[in-house]
Image (cartoon, rainbow, N blue to C red; front, top):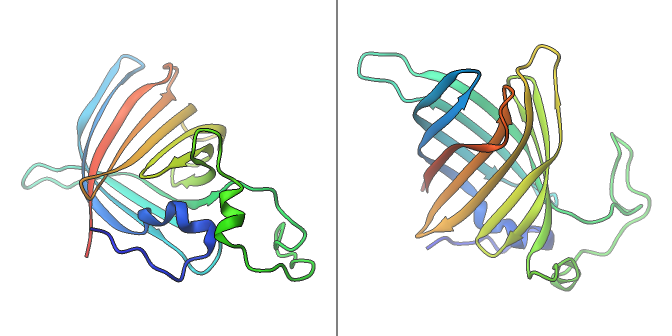
Length: 201
């Protein structure tokens, strides 16, 4: 059982089951450019909040090493997860611009108005990669399942070719399961990694 905090902003209620640090292992399986990428990796994911209407996200992964060998770091990610809603004058931004006026605290009723016809809530996820890539995902959280797909990907000129992605997250028997499909290195969208993570105490 996962205890959900009661002091969260209303906008975080649909995402609150993600909060915490998750660790586990996964499998890579992808073919591109005549090379078959395969192997196991270890993964650590953290979702936290600092009082704002978003979750802070950070993740790292390493190729699993055989005994006596050094593990190989794969990528580090950081970003933000939030419900998708229009920005208001009473919201801060862009950049360091302060809000105009003070908005009343958002309520569960305000959040319910965002619910889609499918029963879920639209979300936006922005992720920066240590290898020079930036992703903006759009998708939906529906109970203990999240589906997101890339709306935009920006990469540095020095980064490897990476064109599109989708991710799925689900809470199953107290574990965080996820799968990540990518279109990279000239290959069309296909599955490339999945993992099963346990929530750390």
